[in-house]
Length: 339
Ligand code: PHE
Image (cartoon, rainbow, N blue to C red; front, top):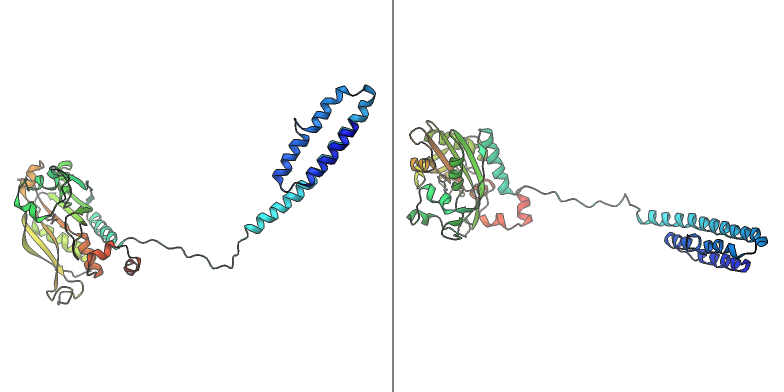
């Protein structure tokens, strides 16, 4: 037994000395001192030691345990120190290094125009309402006085999903949804994405519109004109004048095309406005009484106006961009110029 203890002690010292990390040391500690450990097995074997030898052997075991424990503790504190130093070395931060620049995001120029339009209209008391982009034929056409097979459908090259479902070709669909949902008087605007099978420098299959609708008693074209003057002056600057030209939309009567004085030359005539002094900007008009009636609004009592600029077009004019597609190419060099 004495010999065994001595051998254990020698081997234990050797094993402890060989530990390179705290993890290894902890494993060795369990092996030597744990419940299933070698030292415990000596204690268990005490019962077989002759009575007279027990105090001596007991003493030996206790000694061995003390030696092992103090050896382990000694190595543990030195390993802890080395590991801490190593960690500090690895995590050292050089505060003199130049920092990485953080790229700050920006609102897309198109959405900046949207935001301005929305803010201005909300200030005038409009509610913001949105509708689905995948829309029923009913809301996009039929309830806007464009029955199936009506020639006016040719004005908009529509993506049909089936006979009754399409990608909305205009945000005017939300006019109908608003009229069904709200009781007059009301003022709503609806920003959103629209789709047509069109693609060139001034048309994109996905484009954006900003629909406005006001329904109340005694609404007239004058209200439309003053409202649009305010909206477009906010966008292009004080002093912007607008003019109406007769136009046609099945859902408005009368219908108008709205021009504003060219923001580039202030109406004198320049390259941007092709010398006319005016920019053609949007379609608008008085809501056709038939459209009001179809959505359950008494057209004898109420009248309304509606307008629907293409926001891409407005953003092009605001930023003097010649080609609409540039706005969708995600060319950072280009977009950064419009910050
Ligand atoms: N929805 C029409 C278009 O896309 C524009 C418009 C809106 C016209 C509202 C009149 C009233 O061309």
